[in-house]
Each structure stands twice: as structure tokens, then as C-alpha cells.
Image 1 (cartoon, one colour):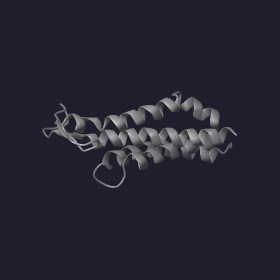
Image 2: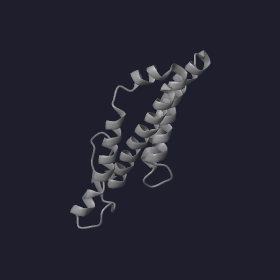
Image 3: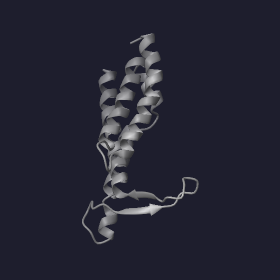
Image 4: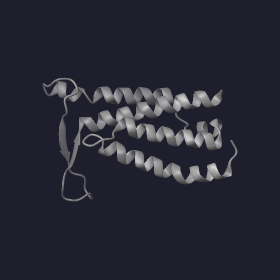
Length: 139
């Protein structure tokens, strides 16, 4: 499709969609949202880019192997369940810790295994849906 309006709109919308997906991802472990919804938003941004500029332009935008990206996401989601086994709990029980990051204030940043699980799901959904869209667009 060679629509100047769609290409221009995509250039403006894509950064906003990517930023919004990160916001949805980061609030997902305690509120609605998370890796699945955030990943769908990223995949929708890539699909929009592919429709506006063609499947070859989308391949240039994503120089990574999507199957490897999916595998990394699965591995990260699986590994998020392991710390609770080491601590004597059940698989996938939430474990939380605090980290002080200089320059981000006096309050510690609370990090837990649900965040890493959500990031793994985020990677898997981005990879699967984008790969699905690419295979449809090439035909």
C-alpha cells in the first residue's frame, strides 16, 4: 500500500504506541495490563508499519530473528519461576526484593519475579504476533 497519509500517521503513532506498551507492561503486575496486552500493542504498531511501508520495510526494521526472540521470552518467563524454588516455595510463587538505584531518589525500587514473567510474556507475544503478521503479509 502506498498511502502517504498512512505512512505519515504511522511515523507519528508508532513511537507513541511503543511507549504506551511499556507503560502497560510496567503496571501489569499489580493492575490490569501486563506482558500480554503490552506485547499486542507493540505487535499492532509493527503491523501498522508493515501495512504502511510493506513487508520488506518491516524486515529491515526488525533485524532480529523472531524465533530466537520468542525463545528468549519463554526462557525468561520460565526462569522467573525458579527463584521461589530456591527459596523453598512453589514454582512461580512471587519473590520480591528492593534495589537502590543512585539518581532515582531516596526510595528503593521494588523488583520481583512477576515483572520478569511479564517481560517474558511480552517478548513471546511480540514475536508470535509479528511473525504471524509477517507470514501473512508476504503472501
